[in-house]
Amino acid sequence: MKTPALKVQIDSDGCGLHFLILEESQKPIRVDVDFSKRNKIGLKSDLLARAIGYRASQKDEGQKLRIVDATSGLCRDSFHMASLGCHVLALEENKMLYRVVSDQISRLSDECHLKIENTEAKKYFKNWLANFSAENKNVDVVYLDPMFPEKRKSAKSGKESILLKLLAPIVSSEQETELLDLALQVATKRVVVKRPLSAPSLKPTHKKYLKPNIQFEGKAVRYDVYVCSYEGLGKG
Ligand SMILES: C[S@@+](CC[C@H](N)C(=O)[O-])C[C@H]1O[C@@H](n2cnc3c(N)ncnc32)[C@H](O)[C@@H]1O
Image 1 (cartoon, rainbow, N blue to C red):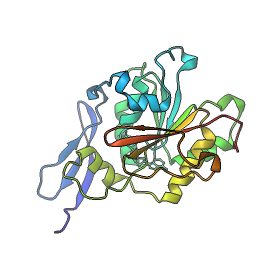
Image 2 (tube, rainbow, N blue to C red):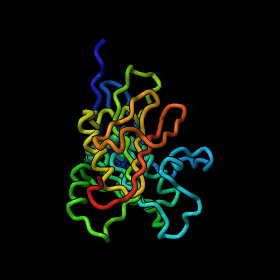
Image 3 (spheres, protein in one colour):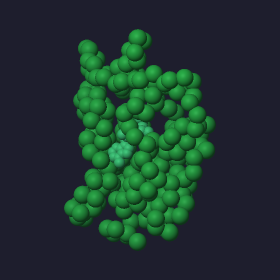
């Protein structure tokens, strides 16, 4: 059977920008990036908070985690981390995702420290490393959630994952390794990689990081944590 051709369009109303997934002769499917509708998760069951090393005691500005979410997509995870009080810089290379998400971020209160840049993450990290100085050594955690090919089409695939699949390419394992290697040079505390439960861990080049130091497993996803001990620019 032929798969119907889907297209994505940006639309707007009183709530700002949103996406429409268009399918021939079907009603458009609306996808919102409405941060106000996100549910808060209790800290005990919050695997992401544990994976990034968040502590409720990190209350002073100087103690708050500074995170770069290098593959931010719809910024669900970025917003989650910013809601904990972390300072999050989200990077997204896709222009349509950037446009809609940045419009929604501009509607958040100033208390939420979430910013987004439309950039390719490897380029951003290379530039960061080239301009490194003691003053800009301020990324505690790099968070990665690369696209992962689904083994089989799931009827349960939500509209958000359909949208991401339409907009974002699956990258090669070499590209994933290059991104992880750069992330490990930039982060001072840890790099966290979100993976489907059954997927293998990404493999960094440096033998110091042959496998994740910690893994947090949920029902469908796993967080692989690579702990960094800061030893200076281009460590190891
Ligand atoms: C699986 S989605 C991330 C979903 C995200 N964690 C969320 O909460 O919505 C991966 C996203 O990363 C983006 N991406 C992948 N590689 C990238 C790169 N090298 N630089 C910037 N963005 C990238 C893709 O365009 C896609 O939107």
